Length: 264
Image (tube, rainbow, N blue to C red; front, side, top):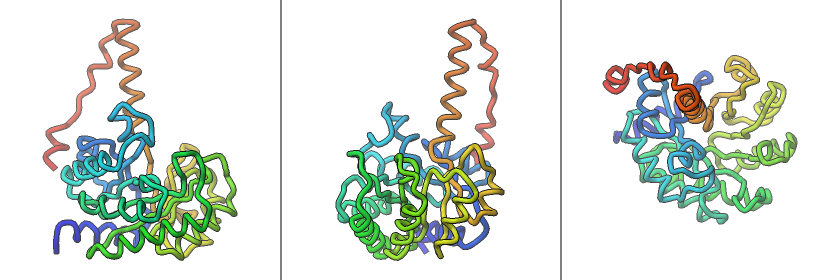
């Protein structure tokens, strides 16, 4: 069995077990730290990666994302899923191409969302065609590739739970392995989504909820999106501000066990 096939089997198996946390590194170094800390799989973050390029979320190209995914895949032996945004094109063919390119980079999972960067959510029929094309591409890879379908309503100004559930059910029928509606804020909403679906549900961590609460509500996978990136950047900004405003060098006393983490 190839390295990628082993990773694909391991990632698929995680979704058949108890709820787990899928953290989101923003570069190879953070990926290695998360691996050393004991996580079992990783997922990229489109916003965190865009930050490393000095850009806002949505401003990276497919080629850049593929190169980034390859670097993260080389960095650890953990399974990697890639945030593929809308597939870098509105057509079903674009969604399928994004899955194939992510797989070429070593990934064993990827997500496709139903929101176009132009500013609209795709109509349901078109969104389903895109997931069906992505699912067909994933099934043709010759190893397990976990396809996540994202319904973006709740983070795009349309917190319509019934509409979100309708979309996720349609994506499930179209062949998605995991269903994801980022922006669910209550355990009641998480429970409603999980009850309505037969396949595993992924949830974006929210500061108002705990892992235990989200897992109890039925979610199988919890990711953090770009949040780890912003925690790190906040620490950078706070330390830099302290140096600039007061000349206080105490924030520079931080020591990290990099030799330990990077020997893993």
